[in-house]
Amino acid sequence: MADDVGARLAELDFAGVTPQEFARIVKGLSGKEISELARGELRERVLGEVFGRMDRQFRPENAGSLRATIRWRITGEKEAVYETTIADGTCTVSEGRGKTEPRLTLVMGDPAFLKLVSGNGNPVTMFLTRKIKATGDLGLASSLNRYFDIPRP
Image 1: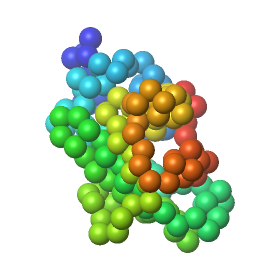
Image 2: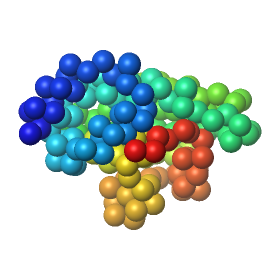
Image 3: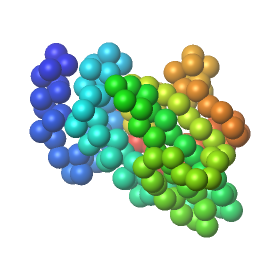
Image 4: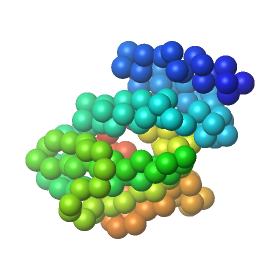
């Protein structure tokens, strides 16, 4: 089944998929299927699209005067690192480790990451079950969903 889903996803134009459609796609996949699909070029495309949309999903009205860098470490076949910086009512995303120490670091596998950003996973439950590891400002971690439009699958 994962091969069939993988073939369909490989042909998908992620730039044309709405966050709600993406949430429905992720909802239909098991963690094992996501892990099998999260290899090579398809993984890079999905991560690139998710992080590429973060600035558009950002809710500046909820961030107020928040200034923080969040480092995302997505483990899997190869670790991917992205950083989101929230400051002055904007959210910027960069690939790789920046020079400043992040206020919060989140570490998770591909299935947990996709479930989290697609609204298919409860962040508190995922943290308590160690699917997400957080170091740094845990208060910021608990309020991240306030700062981004997370789709409802």
